[in-house]
Length: 401
Image (cartoon, helix red, strand yellow):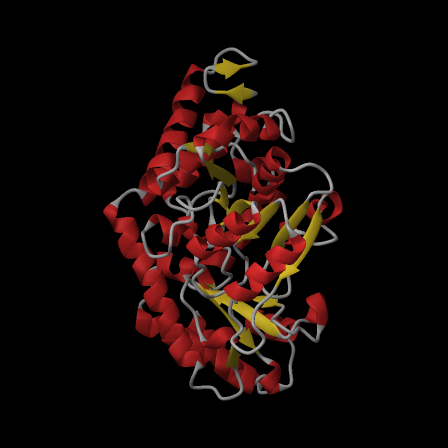
């Protein structure tokens, strides 16, 4: 029996989501579109297998081909990023972070990381996250004038806090991060340096952003976003930390890996090793710069930090007298998908927010050019400006389609 006949409700929802992705402009910075090969690997018979443990050391039989796949993923990850060690089993970036903390820290240890409002992630010590509940997090923010990292201030904070670990990396920061400076700060106070490069991993792989691997003790990332793989996590580290990381992940916080996802990671990592991936990553950056130029023409929109060095930009929309949630919902109506986002000095809270975050990874995969990306920025401005003019919004929606 085919899928549609067996379960028309689930089939219908998936079909509708496929239509949404086909006809909407996807600007969520943490999303991308995987290749047919990645989808094929993730939908393969590997989903039937159970393989607790690591290659050559499994708790179940029949894993000889699973070992081949996982070793390919490990070797490709190490080659792509120049790492001594890789663990490809984390189910998500959050679990990669959790395993890393457990490998390096004791409960209650002090950690210095980026504040959520200024661009950090929930797992960087938010009180609603396990990270903020199990460890004593302190937070650095952005310079209020430049809205960029101030490394001298971070160094001062590190001297005061004396953390066991410093976390560099962000989920909503549009500027390049200097990992060498973070290494110097960590060495100055005798701290481990962890880098969460989830958003920029694809740019790092392409050599278009500073690679944190030579500087950090451990690096975590997701395998989707700019890396254009399946939803999952990855840990890279110096060889001396490999055993502790492996144990912290399994049996520490996970059971068996998702072998079909590990296979999809292997395929995506193989794609990222090809010369064409660097071309793709460069187009991500070119499209973002073009989109920024479109936003800059609108005096009512303010770009956080004045622009972008990577695949995303944050936009303060309050100049129009609206909040981020309202703009997110408005853009949904015209077929443009974004997300509301807090900005430095946030006044509206996390559910309304003062800004939106947009990214160019997914539209670049779909083949958007720089001129088309600039036009998308102009359409966003036009939609906000004409938010009470339904015929104008209908016209914008038609152009999106």
